[in-house]
Image 1 (cartoon, rainbow over the protein chains, first blue to last red):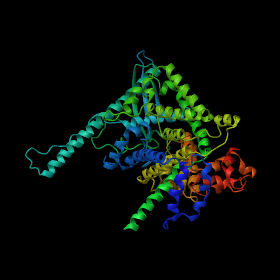
Image 2 (cartoon, chains in turn orange, cyan; image 1 turned 180 degrees about the horizontal axis):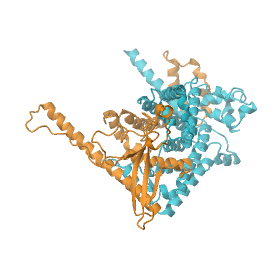
Image 3 (cartoon, rainbow over the protein chains, first blue to last red; image 1 turned 90 degrees about the vertical axis):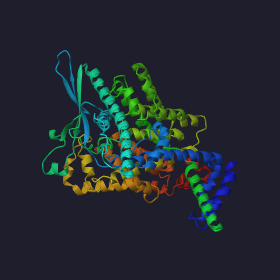
Image 4 (cartoon, chains in turn brown, red; image 1 turned 135 degrees about the horizontal axis):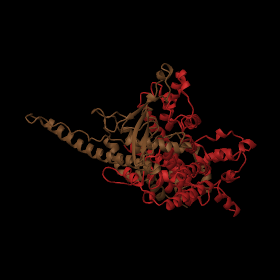
Length: 280
Length: 352
């Protein structure tokens, strides 16, 4: 019997260790007494070693994605340790749907995002307009939340149509030090990575947008559809208590342009971090 | 030097012993069986919503069609590991068949009929739907997948199931603790700790969770509201208290949920937070499923006593909470049963 071999060799070492905090009475603990009656109390050592390796692997796959997510900071930088480890576990993490940050309502509860649509018809019928998610239309609540997440996902996936700007080259007549040349090369490499990411994310965004448009056209039988991302801004306590505003007031809804008005960096919540409640 | 080597070796032996005790000590199936019923029920409900709205979410002209889902699950280097058989199905009839099949599998899981097979099948189905429906998912689907995965590991049909009822009719209805149930319970416990730890770390990075206004912004968000709670603006102290408690509870859950003294507080706060999310933030499914996940920290003997109403009939002399005396599932069996049953019979008390 494997359990009879293992228990006497492992446990007494702990009991005899003067540094252990475990009371000596463990030798007569209910666990020990119950052991022979429990058919699976001890697996063979080989099984336990094999299972331990699998458990460690799985636990790392559980821990690493949120760790990597937490290591990302606002300027796009992240930990090479987290990125490297996650890349090793990528197939398992993706297959087991473990790639989440668990940043529920974090780092801050942010504005929510909706989608307005307008479907037009070739036969002259008046256009159909609407917005999703729509609590009145989408019941039960879970169905509403599915629509809510689609509108949030579209916004999270948004990439502006223009690629990230190339790093400015040094002036032709400038005398560069080795350090400056190195920095320039690093900037070019970083730009190449950013360009690849932008191309991929933009393709994903366009596919999402096009799929949503096709769904609306099929649903209503229209000939043309226009969708607009809408941001619903949150009211501060001051807005409500002193200005008397309500969460559904028209001025709290802002249409988001497909092409950014300014050429500055993207707002922090776009692309990098999830909005309130939406998570990865 | 020899003493140092011996001390280090002893430490490793101690760690290995504790590791074995933590993972490979058998556990009774009651907690995972109740989780199978509640969690399986949620999987069934989730699937019901997908099935009723099949054309909207899974069909050829769904909001996010299969090609889009494939692209969303492909990384920029062209790799894709998020498999799903649903990527390749767009026939409405075949989709209906698969949806009904999934409903039957989840129904069988709840009932505990051929549990070992349907629990593995349920995990595969849950993961396949999660991958296909990328873009329409949220926290509910994450915790659905977590619970479905660990139910597939556990002997979750060992009790409160058709399987157990049929076994009893054949005279084989004894309930034994098993290692797989313990492993599944431990994995779920640790997964819950990871979820809360990073939920807390994420919040700790935001300013609104420190100035006490985050709960206000969550409650005042129209898209999440079940009820208009903006009148709470008159009670900033209350909102700030909720905010601070939430951050500290999430951050330190992974430490305080283990000791016997703090576990009830931790689980009590979990119940309050998740019922709050269910009632006031428009996510009853997510709130309840997270609450079910916390069941992993309730001892099987406690579950057995509560389900069997033994505490009402006075068969358990200790109060239910007193069974949370240490972290050993087998030792728990003693604390409940020693009042009425001989040691050899301890494992069977919960079968009644």
